[in-house]
Length: 296
Ligand code: PHE
Ligand code: FE
Image (cartoon, rainbow, N blue to C red; front, side, top):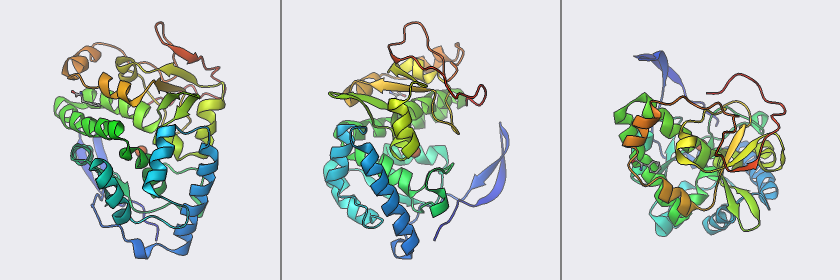
């Protein structure tokens, strides 16, 4: 039972005609998962568990244990929700594919995390270009058990609703922040740099690359710098940003972004791989293997 979001029609926007996808919020059709679906989950789960020892942030590992997710079978959202609601008041809702931005923000603002119900096929174990159940559930959901990160995600949702009302440039600035934190963030744990971004946590290759390769930059968190920095969607990141703690992330994003968006509108974006004066550099990337074009 593997369904991809269906392209149903095209809609005219200021970017021309763009495809519109089905976006239904649906109950997880748990009994419809096949033995192959459960097996894909089990294999991915076990593979990442091993890789993440000494690589994932302690907060993630603790949260994951508290949620009782296991390789045994695809978890039931209803079961996870009992634990999650009691811990931080968040809940999971099943979705078919990517939601329109405003819907996504509205769910987060109300402590609902949309989780893609379908899982990749055995042929897609190492890479697929859109979020599936494994990315969403294994990668994003555990940290919603962490009170500070849980509050950050809700604040991000509220900020998204606001940015959506300001315009596409503000939205692009905010999306970069999400990309370089919730998706590809690193954190300084007592024993060294660790992963908390779900785009990394759900990828075998990038879990190793982001910490152990000399190629990428690893640079200290800086809000406005990140909001100007372009990113990669089809290769490993050229730069990872490192927070000291979730408290730092939460505090830094508390101010009203309205004047920040206005300021950023006057400044150029920064290429994904650039190191700048004033950056707190943990690693200056060698740039090995980087493609010259393709920054989004
Ligand atoms: N403080 C931001 C604003 O005013 C909202 C926000 C919070 C954005 C947390 C991202 C993360 O728009
Ligand atoms: Fe994601």
